[in-house]
Length: 263
Length: 119
Image 1 (cartoon, rainbow over the protein chains, first blue to last red):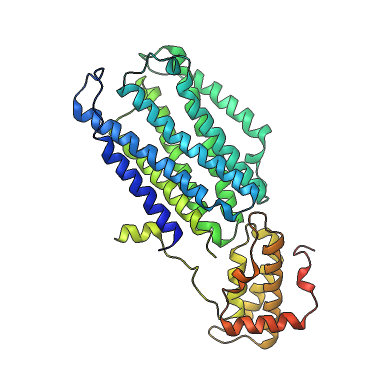
Image 2: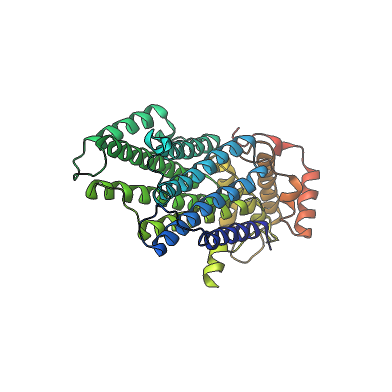
């Protein structure tokens, strides 16, 4: 069995094991809904967190074959992918364990993983694009950053239904979703450009990374539209399934990247 | 099982090349920026288009392809922006007969393939 398959199977095995073990975690006294909802909500969030961490492990498993510049680029991308999973999961943990009144939530720390995820993925992909000599406006910070700022401002001005959330929290959460959509979208554009530019040996790994980023853009856009149209951030099993699928896309991207080690 | 097969995919990595064109084409796949090797790819496609399907290329064309391969190999070992390739790893893609013909050609030549690809 080849290294790529071994590492991928190991990662999937650990994610499924973590998923099953999480059903043993008892509901806290603060939990007011039914027990099965607690169990499934928690288990799903643990599954997609482990899948995202596993994808990052796969990316890092292959970087030693490459030059220092690409190692750094993939380390940034991998940390961004971990932050995507951890960021989404912490929202679930905060809700199910009744941690809404903690300083982490009250002072906005809960938003940091999402802000950092977009930045880490974008700067990682941008570094990779510059390494292979990709010339694109998407690598130009004088274009991307002003566009990012304008998009965030426009998002704040968009009309929305009344929200039970405080207006400031609502605005910040939408601003961060737009921030991520723009940065994931720019990263996706760059990955497609790299895919076109690079030799056939890298086509598959770039295609799967592009699919993973497409998943991130779609999920974040879904959260954004859901928040605007209902006044609260969407959750539930549909989002869980989407994030698990997003994690699997990154796992496949990581698997394809490990395969590029072999000549 | 089909899902697993599709998920893990198939690999070309273990393939051994028996023709000079296949060997050079395989080496070109490893370049992380095709633009850098465009002149070589153009030369290679010119020679490939002259060969009739299934037939062996002429000894002169094979030497021309070996020359392209050696330039590609030099590029991959010294100038590829993402990875430093090892000569033996690359040549292990060739069958024993092809490799000995390549190395015989290499010995007969001055070191012209060490020139930058985009001169």
